[in-house]
Image 1 (tube, rainbow, N blue to C red):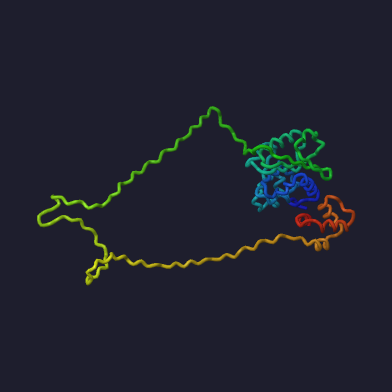
Image 2: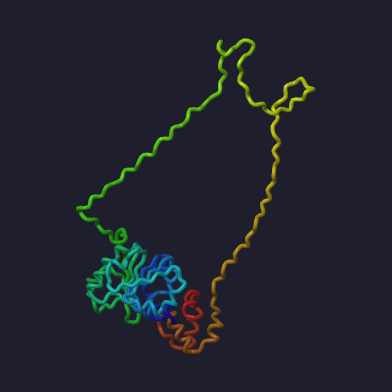
Length: 306
């Protein structure tokens, strides 16, 4: 069905896990770190492919290279190669959710998964081969099963951490630079004009020193005896025309709706049986039962299988 679409087996495993942990429905609102992509299947991809931030890690660059067209143009997806499973692959942490679809294969990988929980805020989801582990080793995990396949989830505990911080050498002294004080700007004293009293030396025979000031324009009429106010220069007012551009409101995209009757009309009996199996998790007894399952399915599930 394609790398970025949910298969019937994936949908069945997802439904079983959803029954135990309903909050997994919010994957599309979380930042997701998908670990150890094998180049074949990207489990639950339809549930998180539109998340705000997705990091897809693989141990081999060739796994990512052959699917590069599937990821092209998706600004929310970052691909990352790390041949070894170690904490360096989680740079940019913390994230909300870890998905390890294939899951740990031995006790060492299970221990690595438990240590990696500190880089995640909410929970980790991982595939599980129960024959590889004892019941005590799986304490704390919520395990769901579908068609002899198990999927488990564990909540993260404590406050998530960021990328591993490197400590400086012990003999290295860190000198803190003191901020240099800003130079004070000297303000010039304000000069206030005041009338000075005339002194004897300022008066000479036949004349007196006086301070002259520039003449201000007046509108005193020579024919009027009254003192009129100082004339004010005329200021022209310029009216500015502001043109407002009205933008047309963007039409909201209509949600896709599956016409169930049209879907049944164009599907053969085998396709109806397969769709019913993906929707219900069990193979229907006949075509009539398959059509009944398809008609009762939600629009969201129909969009996945159609």
